[in-house]
Amino acid sequence: MHFETSQCYRGDTETPLWRPAQGLKLGNDTSMLVLGIETTCDETAAAVVERLSDGSGRILSNIVRSQTEEHARFGGVVPEIAARAHVDVLDGIVDSAMKQAGVGYERLSAVAAAAGPGLIGGVIVGLTTAKAIAMVHDTPLIAVNHLEAHALTPRLTCALAFPYCLFLASGGHTQIVAVIGVGNYVRLGTTVDDAMGEAFDKVAKMLGLPYPGGPEVERAAVGGDAKRFALPRPMLGRADANFSLSGLKTAVRNEASRLVPLEPQDISDLCAGFQAAVLESTADRLSVGLRLFHEQFGPPRALVAAGGVAANQAIRGALQDVAAKAQTTLIIPPPALCTDNGAMIAWAGAERLALGMVDTMDAAPRARWLLDANATAPAGYGKTRAAF
Image (cartoon, rainbow, N blue to C red; front, side, top):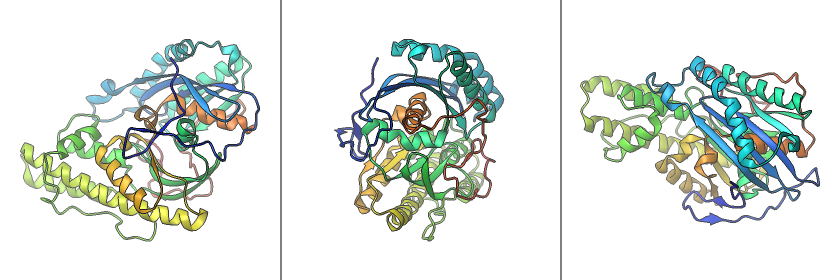
């Protein structure tokens, strides 16, 4: 099964929007096939992607196995359980990805694996598997930064040229990044405490909503009064583009404790208020981030949103407003490519391979791995369920 990747999607519509592949440069005049492996958190994934000689890409297979059921009763991801699950199923998923793509290992140009940042047990499983495949088949190895894979995904889906601005919001990451080129990233803002997806999950848990909590909070907020509670808007008006969500999360807990036992309407109102606060804070932080981008690099070709939080429809609406005010286009890859997947790892590997960026068997798994090598680690770095 082949997936069309010559389309991209604006944030305000699901109508395909073609963007020409301007600015793409190819370091290899032949097509290449890359196997990508992703195991940084609670998805076990493998994919085969073809990078064509003109710099465009095709997804030949993309297999993702979620561990939601294994972790649901704990209300969050348990690292040991996640690592064991990766061990149990990864070989089969890699085999399925290769069979679905219809290619043999001897045809691979490289094997790419997410080498971090993430839960170290899972990262070790994926990287070790990739090394074994690369050694057996005498194939180049590429150790991919999971965040770089998110950053480069719009180059696969709609041939987006550099530079552009990335808003990455998931269970383990929240940051604004200037994407200047392959391997060239400048962090403009980051969370100083909780990641956005993590905050949604924790609010859901304290309100007794099922896991994963993000979609449950969004669902409950639909019937809620966002103005009932005076919740804070973290970092609003600051000159930097950083985020903070721990204080907002604590404010929700305090209101919930005051109302115990909670009625269904209380939960809906708290979810609506929390989500509204996140939306206002995010819009403000992104506006600052886009301004900083413009000052340093000129107008961005697009604002790109990635990560599971980008699936939240209310947040998508806020991002569309921010992009419109900044006179740029909002691009959100298809949902299956926003969350963790093997195709993004394979594509990042192909982009690096085209530039001659390969790794040795000494490549180490990393629990923490800054995308911007020149940035300083934020407070609390590496203390959440995955690194910033």
